[in-house]
View (cartoon, rainbow, N blue to C red):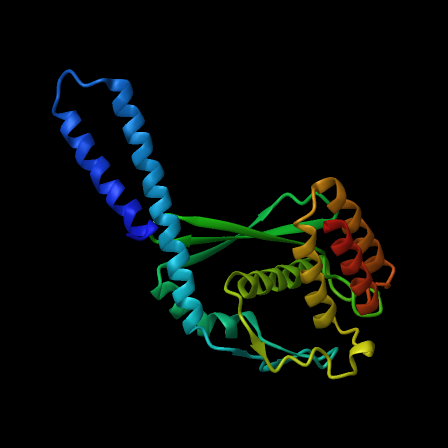
Amino acid sequence: MSKEIAIIEDGKNIISLIGKMAENPDVDVEKMAKLVELQEHIYDKQAEIAYSNAMQELQQEIPTIEALSTNPQTHSKYAKLEHINKIITPIYTKHGFSLSFGMAECPIENWFRTTCTIRHKLGHSVKEFIDLPLDDKGIKGSTNKTPVHAAGSSNSYARRYLTVMVFNLTVGGEDLDGNKPQEMSGDELIGSMQGEVNDLLRKLPENKRVPYLKEMQTAKEEGHLSVDYLTTMKDSINSDLK
């Protein structure tokens, strides 16, 4: 008998036992409460297993997402969020999933945290997040957006990155900015690498994570946020994680 089947059978047995105990006027209330607590734990475990199985099945159905849009500033190819959603939303909803995005307090000043809660219809949920600076500067470090537009741009990128991360999507045709790797400095490439850095930073304790976030913010404000800079930072973080 598999672990999944055993958990389901245990849940059925406990429900039956609780029903019989409830018919007894002399039932031990404390024992009854413990059984109810155990039943809730089994329900939670069943929901977690259902979430995992459904995620595995939907990832087998999701195709490669083609990068059909071009960044006019960097000439990089990328997939817009609406294009990604048009393809994957019918698939993940069919398997019982929903996504909801929100904001949360970020530990670094002038940055913001975007959250994504992935819920399954049987009750299990997982929350992911990404921390990003306000996207108000271009590739040369000069301000090129109003605060409102910068917030919208950052939020759009955060939602797109989280969606790709949650479902482990593959985006085909992304050429970053069409230049040689050592010359790539487009917004899309830098944004993508910032996402990778954020993934690594989440594995560090907050006292080690915050200095890196502040350093990255300073580099962005001074126009030093380049591919080489972020690559060096990734190496440093990986070293701290060892």
